[in-house]
Length: 398
Image 1 (cartoon, rainbow, N blue to C red):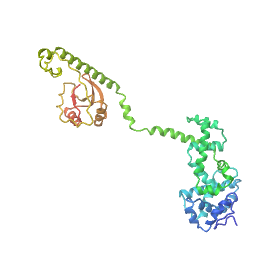
Image 2 (spheres, helix red, strand yellow):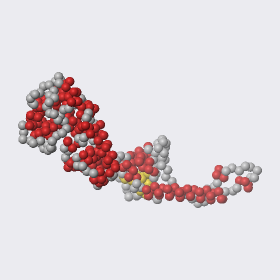
Image 3 (cartoon, rainbow, N blue to C red):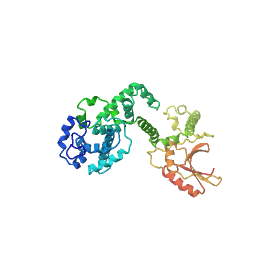
Image 4 (cartoon, rainbow, N blue to C red):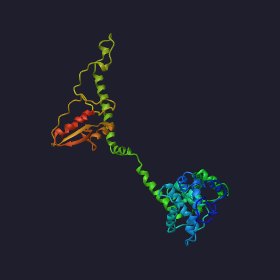
């Protein structure tokens, strides 16, 4: 049969591209049209191989007419490019002979690997696709072992220099995993057609002629992109936590005020109980009541405990019956809107109204400053919103 002749499936186009098991499966498709082979080629490898058998003689005639010494490698690159376009729908493959002619014209001007081609063209394409689908680490380990013949300790040292700690034993396990993953990505029909004999025991990756320098460069670019993307995936919720870290001194100050106020209350109760008359001494026949319930006259100089700020509970309804806002003391003319220390939860609520709210001392107590206004009217508008949220605003002129 003439090499450029096409129509039925040409089983004698290239002895390296067919075997007996393959032709037994695809000969039944020789009556299919080109449109059927093109349409079903990406879903069923038999149709793809039948298309290759039908037009392989034409592609061979196109590339052998050139001065290229490695025409088999050029022919395989034509078919790999054709299968890529066919399964990605990047071009109209009909009519098939004109489509293959355009691809061959582009491939003849490209750089192709030098050396003989051992693999059948369809199998080389399926292996190339499976190799591209591997993770960058497994792909590089497979190429370093199969193509570059690097020992395991050298591969481990290469990854360790790039902040990927791998031992030689781990490299061996990853190499076996890469081999399994590569074969698992091949369609079952490809296993049946090509891996029925000794071919499954051969090392197939070197026959794809991958360029080691390009593979190393591609892996390092992937690693740099991976290192850059990881910090961008931090959850935004971590940002407010960092803003709370600049107020630990006020939290500690609140605890000190709380402890001192408790000590003052205990001292005050001790003084009152010491000077109170004993109910048992005055009325022995009547059961005594708890001393805390006896009406006691106020001391001449009562000890005023410091004011303890208590943050409002989130579950409580907003306090709308709060006392009126304290009058504004005389000052420099500007009106300061303050709220006594509301605690972390209250600070979050306040920052929903004013994002620039911050802590400041006022009359020896920690307060949160909401804003500074040039008129009292503007300050009271914001104070009304704070009252609706359950806070007790303070208007002051500092």
